[in-house]
Length: 373
Image (tube, rainbow, N blue to C red):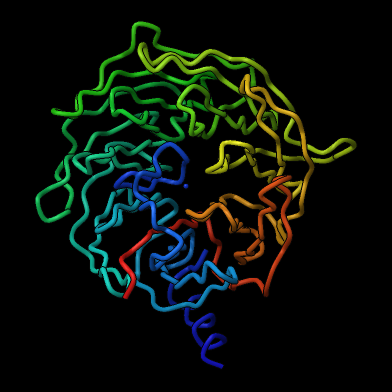
């Protein structure tokens, strides 16, 4: 009864539905997750195109989600979290907002918001020292660097750069020396040097890593080995394996494969990509086919398809993997659900578990590990 009531509140009041010291939805930025994550208090945040951000307790033994609370927010379509703060973008208002995270409950308290530095912010990330936030503004084709204040709030943009058409995300490398911006409309990943002391971005000596014409690069994730990365291309439904040179900050393509199952027909776009914490598998979501593509990673970084699993809903815009690597949560924007899957550690395959969580147009789902209460 309590769970049903909380789920109803999540839908009505929140919009409910990838670490170092930060979590922005990608392996390689997961230093935010302590090594004892299996015994930590895991909290899941869900947001999207509904009226707020929700937080839920996660049971790492069963994969169960228990809604706890929510806070009103305007179209918080993407989030980034540190151990103590959460940052959100508002697409309709062109704002970036900061919240304090209650270390006991995961509850949120609004701190402040600032201009996002461009139109249509689609992604927000935090550097590993939690000193700067970056916002990728899809409509404006810009990336803004926002200093984080002493109280966790955001200061006005220190720098705004224009990496290309439809800047879709910003990803820091593990050492905070470089940053990468997939530009959907330019068919390349812009490559920057990042000054961790000042937050300054300067174009890398090799400023772009090109994709195929019309690919539409969307999101990027590093592998745990630090030598490879994986790029999901939205418009041609492909996944590109890349070699990464950590000394120069350069990405080089190795292989491009389709994210779609053999025989798939109709319209489809790629959305999210995650590398499993083990480094053995990479996952990509298909909107249209409404499934997750699963690939095994070879020692060379190249990919072999393992299979495809339906997400149990429509338009899986986002998904995430828990810090232990045992569970995957898929946010189905088109059917207002978040669905939990168990991950087979040997094969990488997924098995749906439990009942779906009701959430209004979820576009983001992500974990934070808090100290056990």
